[in-house]
Length: 615
Image (cartoon, rainbow, N blue to C red; front, side, top):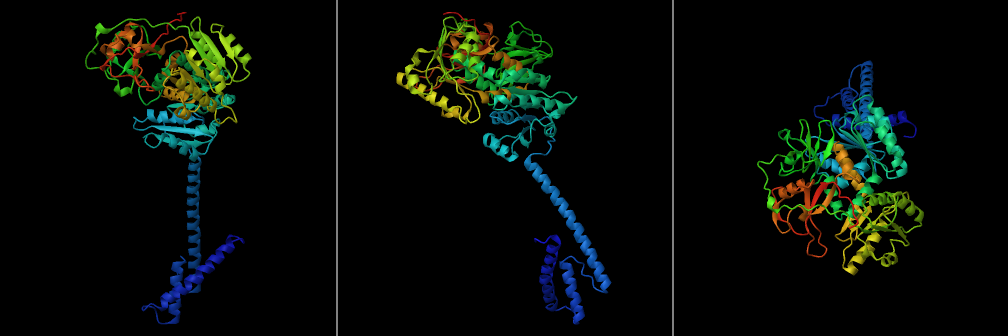
């Protein structure tokens, strides 16, 4: 074999002859029908050898035998070459498919560009959103091995979805790679932010590559995100029209501030953002054209109407009740899906006798405790200052020498929320024991930023939560704790009580991007819901809408909330009698459902926040 192909062929031919010729001779000499003469037997041996080795086996003059052997060798060479070419082509194609370098021929698919902590969440939610369609495809493109991506995603999403999942390998900043996945024929493109905020410039480059691939074609809706606000303007310019660029740090800070003021609110946001239950949809309802918005509030039994999408794309969230529904408008509803939004057969059962009209209580002065510090902490302070009532106070325990950073953040907040810096490490029990934790209305726990070399950014957060849990068990008093975590898997093992809200920034961003990619109108909706001044999701005592202890349908609650300028979308039950039991939350319940409303029940509404006061 070391001497080359020609030598190897000669040795193989000699080995075949050594085996084939004796065996052919044995076949001829043992055949009862074999010829009697020696020459005829030798000819029969040659024919058997030629047929076995595909050499023709012609007998006769030597020239004829040589020509037949030559033709057989030419045919053998040709067939071998064709088989080799076909085999090589198939092998290269299989290798290309395995490496994820082949083109995607689908259209109307959703493309996910990049690999980060949000990828499994985004893919899982997209598969759930597209499960009701006859044909749907999700394409993931990242600079990773195709098989590894498929195995990791299948471990999370499983194989139960009908939607096709396709993975392709390549640099997402390369226009040639993007051209292979057909972004110009896609339904939407999601550009995930890198885990490191220092790489946000790469997101801008990906958006520019998408525009280069699309050329002059109709721009496809793009949903992207950056972590550093310094790249936000550039990313929006690169994304172009019909695109949405989110800023993750600002989004996380807003939600943390909202959850601190209203414990339990994170569960409502979670239910509205994932595709497992009810979420926002837009539906056509020509039969309501010309009627005021108040008539639409109780028009559906299995959906909650919360706004109107004008024909020109403008979104009116929780509009004035006298707002008329025009021709071409679509209703914004909270529902299981589009198909479940069907007009009720008759008017709902509304009992005006049990309705009440108590205004929402303005925020009162609160004492807050912030444990930990990261790059989002100054934004959290700014959001808290916007809502803080006079007399509120914030104590900060950073665990590091961050006095100047805390002072700068407090000054940037406008001085409306006094900030006190306390020494200590929030991951040490000496620090927690020295704090009078029971004296605070709410506690916020922030973990360190994700950075190279820090594989477990939630580790210190888990330790802090464990120490707070020990305080709860020692004092017998529950704490309202709002916690920011990086990895959703750590939420399951977190040692917390029933009064803890989790903001998992990576999962939250993934859910939000998946929602917007399937309905572009929701970008405006979520921007207002998470803002400091617009309509937002709030928890209000049920006694503000119906008398405590009375039985009433949820349609009665919806109608009562509508009179007060709010859209009711669900409720949360009163605290359970058993220790450690959690309150149950229901989003988009059946409006015909009749229940007894207890004193501690809360209604989930979308409304304008009440102005703060010094209470």
